[in-house]
Length: 24
Image 1: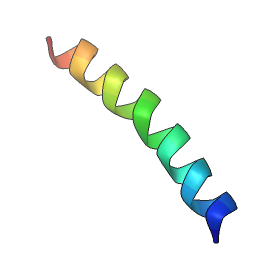
Image 2 (image 1 turned 180 degrees about the horizontal axis):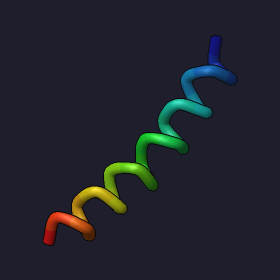
Image 3 (image 1 turned 90 degrees about the vertical axis):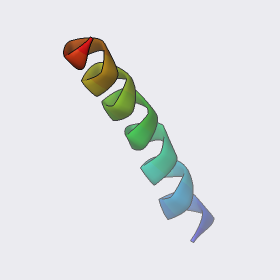
Image 4 (image 1 turned 180 degrees about the vertical axis):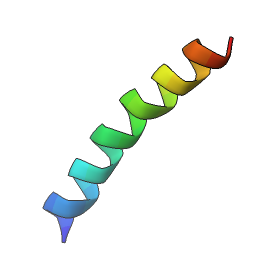
């Protein structure tokens, strides 16, 4: 469970950053 949560956060962070950078 912890492994899945960590992987999700790690993937969510870069995705959000890219999306924000692209929109901006």
